[in-house]
Length: 310
Image (cartoon, rainbow, N blue to C red; front, side):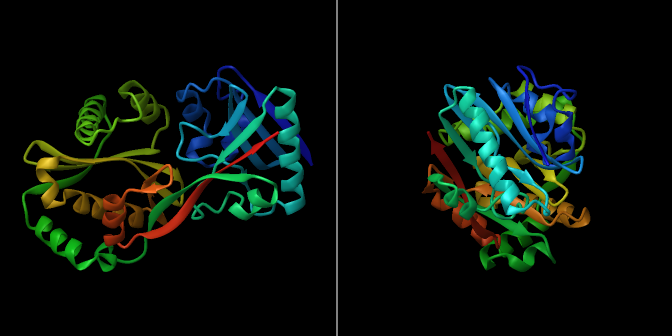
């Protein structure tokens, strides 16, 4: 067994090539580099010359976080890693971070549908405290999309199928990404929100990570009325990353039709989970968003952030 630490001011595929063995999108060198982390550090465990666990953290102002600017971080581990090795790995991480002047470690955990990460119970047992508990929702991709729908959403979907809104999985291009980014940004501004990625960063991610990002659109004639930019976290999970609906068409619920297309794409490509993301902010439930996902047949889980100070 061997523990390693990798540091780099600028993450390059050569420096962080070891992380290629981790299938998660958010651990890929191209993704990490696009986030402009101040001081990225990776820790790894090798057993019999094979990578068996890894974590990437961003170190800034005495705090090491895995991973801010991403939906989640935490430790990736294979299913053969023992509890003892996992404990030793965490001790190694804490010791090395302390040498770097770090005084706090913060872990943004994924939903339990991602089986690669330690459980909440592990972090609590190791002395970590909960910072926030967010409400996450997902769809299990099995059977027909409309089988799990609430009656109200089923009626809307039936109307959409016979209406004049057209749904498509579109080929990614510069023009399409610019159109969708502007649309999502405008929709969010109407809600008093901001899009959390610039158009340049979005294009960088989509074009540098071939096949990991998808764009789905709903159009009335040529007018964009709803859009979703989704990303493949790994072979089993598609993440509902940037959704938006034009307020003028909200009563028609084009997002329901768009989600049917996304669900069918997952089913056709053997993706087991459609991760709809969190429906809370700083632990406070966004009731309308939560209710919408529940009417789709979503399953609720808890997505926690834990921290430890020394």
